Length: 381
Image 1 (cartoon, rainbow, N blue to C red):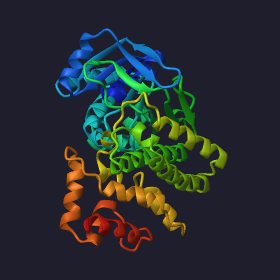
Image 2 (cartoon, one colour):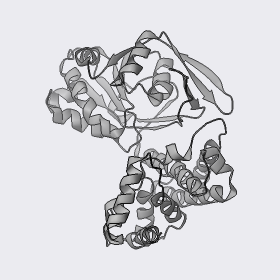
Image 3 (cartoon, rainbow, N blue to C red):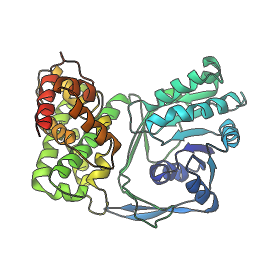
């Protein structure tokens, strides 16, 4: 079995690549980072260091590496004969991956089993985004794509911090991971991937992860940054930050339980597991890394405005979520381009205009006024 995996970075090597290696796939890594591809192409293996409770080291081999910018023909040829394509490139990069996937599908022999395509990104229904871009590319028409490829959405979860200098291709990750995959597109040909969970309705699991893990992680970063702390684990060790983050997840828990029917005890157990993960002192994760790209994190359907808006629509005013959003609006890392852009929006616009531009909320939305008060407070200094 062969998989072409786009994105040879830390998540690609330390999460998706590891699980697919363990499932018996030969991996063809594709990436535009030439130095990384050169190093992978020269290496026989790399190690994934799982840290936390029950730490262990897992070795990955049986892989090749191609530059998806300069070796496009070879990448397309690999896709044409692969069993699977996966990605870990970031949702905004999928449009650049799509032409290669489209061309690879067009070249596939119709006698081959359909190519299984899964975008493993930190976004809701990322595979749908990739599929739409593949169809828009036009190398194959929609019926041909439908006959030669299967597109399945996934939800992925594993904390992969910035890596220590000099670590080379090795990757340090937390012991916990979750890869949930929509099984319905596969019919009777569901892939055999140990550690992955296949479900018939992925939507609730995507939102559970986004509104618990991502909301909680970002809240820890922004509140920890506001408290002058450097590491995520240090922030979680601070009683004030811990209490604020726990309160945020209590609010998102109430939404998830009422909306998707998760048992309250099960969701509470999930919340406690997530809080413990953030507290993992063996992960050298920083509040600056986790807090980067605040404009994306504060956008309309993301981890803060998404759940807070739904609570407000249900007549419930979020309190802890709004406090975390206030900390996010004050995030001022000078090396983060989105933080600088957000500061520019706050400085150059009225509170109403800035609220609309940052959050995507309409002025008539029941959450708008509460967020605008936060914006006014930030603008006032």
